[in-house]
Image (cartoon, rainbow, N blue to C red; front, side, top):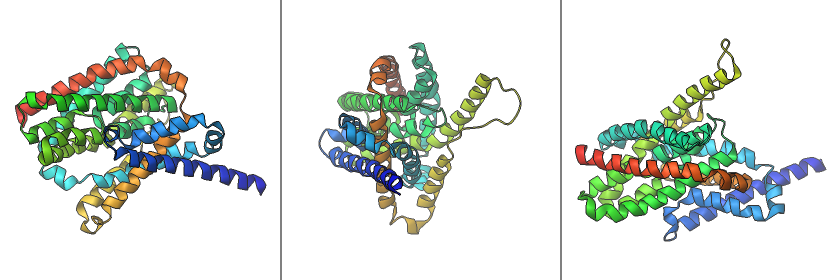
Amino acid sequence: MQLSNLCWRRASIGLIVTLVCSIAGQALAKLPGFSLIGHLVLALVLGMCLQFARSLTAAAQQSTPFIANKFLRAGIILLGFKLNLVILMSAGLKSLEAAVVIVAVMIPLNYFVARFFKVEHTLAILTACGCSICGAAAVMGVSSAVKAKTDQSVLAVAIVAILGTLFTLIEVGLQPFLGFTDAQFGVMAGLSLHEIAHAVAAGGAAGAVGTDSAIIAKLSRVLLLAPVAIIIGILEARRFRKQDGASEGKMTVPIPWFMGGFILASAVGSYLPFVNDFVPSLVQLAYLLLGMAMAALGLNVNFGVILEKGVRPMLGAILCSFVIMGLAISIVHMFF
């Protein structure tokens, strides 16, 4: 009985610590400057900082693997309510077509550039998806399919956060020289920047019209997370099977099935009117759970691995971030 109580107490400590980090991250994200970094990355950083309190970290780590895994999936499913398919299909169909081009071009390009810089396969996929689709959520959405280690996921999230913030500032600085309308600039921001927070921040420089256009374009990329995760799951299953030397028998496909919940939540929120009143609360809960998952990752990160392996993937991602910005500018010039 005493052992059971001790285990429950330690599990509770992990829940409380990650919850506090998530709430604190939300509060910090509302402050000037921190909004560019975003709530999820701030929760991750807070979790990493707590590693200096070793006794607290040791007590919390009993439950952090469960939180990082299960809460992440629940958060991504609930995040689907943020994706209004009706709006995308009506106002954002052209943005969706552009998003397909962006994602189809940039994931392979990011991957092969990372491999050129001798980045390991798993980390190359994580950074490619994070930079090409929707930042931290994309990294974590495909991490199970590629059997990523915690350090690899955290490093990919860090790269996405740093470059997303940097290129938000670059694009806002370029706005007067691009000759775009407010709507065009918003589309460009949504097609090129990594996190939703980055796209909103940059689009906001073009006013309400720019913000709306940026959100629609960015959510068009978010919609592609589910099919990309499934495709990567199938490809990774084949790769693992080939590595194991298995030519016959049943192939185990590590498809992230929770992505089906993400699409289902999108459909429910889009086509069932009575759900609309609950959508803001569900999305807020989604970000709270995702923040807890990110804090749990931060509590388990190996700083030595990040310092050792971070330079090469960062260089590759910087080059590809310039490419995606140039591609987005070209698409907006030609089609919007």
